[in-house]
Length: 191
Image (cartoon, rainbow, N blue to C red; front, top):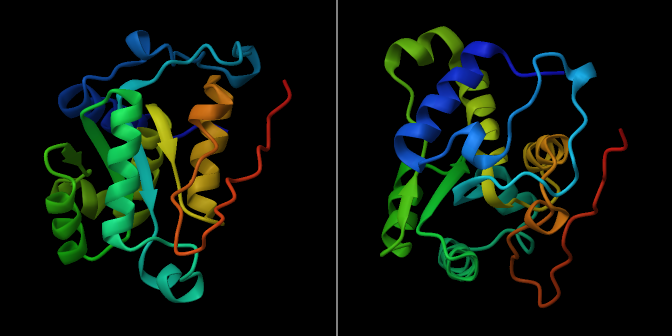
């Protein structure tokens, strides 16, 4: 299964404009026909940014111990940015605008990015189209970390597996209140 071309193009435009990322330099070029594509495991590099799926809203209540506070999420993202020697972070989140603005402030001096569609694009493709663009942008990052037991995060990890990203830059998650934080299972794709 492949994403729709218009969504891939919009994600590529955003990556190029804001994240200095393109498929050639990121080593994420795939063939048009999925049947002709067999990635070399670990060969994908990704764009020079960290991507994060930070689930909020219902997850704060349903999985409260597993979802970090904004302050703890920012601390973990800053540590990852420093470890990966990156300056930019792309955040896919369902957080209300006030929380996102607070998170931007907590992330200083790093540069925080979020996809904001034009009204015309949103009217045509809606929340579903925006979610897919978030997934595409997250999947192309140098390093990805997601949210506990999130299908959205799992789908990004799966896409990174398809493109051939290293396991250690793909199967990661933000930690919540618990002292022990298990990383996600590594569901590897066999070609």
